[in-house]
Length: 241
Image (cartoon, rainbow, N blue to C red; front, side):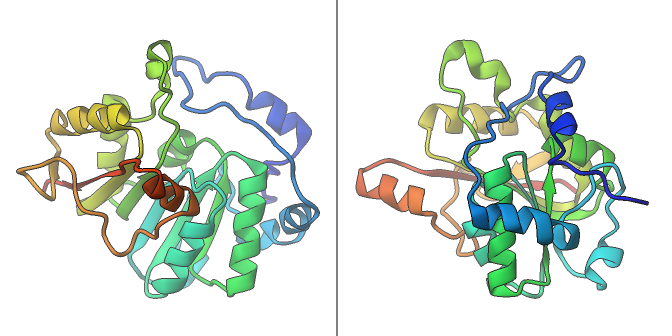
């Protein structure tokens, strides 16, 4: 079956509207796509891109059995590519809606010759719901999501009871949900939602926040924030058995 083209103008236009009954946690901003990113979208997407209209079959894609990690909102893809390069024994899926970031990640995949990373350019909730099998993920990552800081926009924050219920369905027993943010208010919001999710338990029960694990690379944005004295909060919760 021919893979749907997420970069077709008609597809992009259709994806602007809110799904019925759900408020999206993102607004698609196309931004400037460089010549290199355009080449990547044209030549590398058919190799490393995943079709959001088809169920994801890990063994067919990666040709092996390995721990499966999925990341929502990978930005420019640098940290996700580094993670995949440093953990060749694990397989990774990245999901983002922004073409420049997708193109940039594809260039990293090519440059690092990564065999264990594939990419969706689609709504993460729709991918999780329609493509990812239940009880299949070893870890789901959500690093520095849009905090939607204005009170009237809090309804757009991706971490809510419905999202966490979906995460629980997709994680294996003892699978991890790892979120990180540099907005203290959003960290508190996520901690409250996770503490109220009976199906998940913190890796540090005495404190909802965890020390950044070695597997999560520091981003350039995060390093700059640290120099300015900004805090970063990691939350790592496991699916209860």
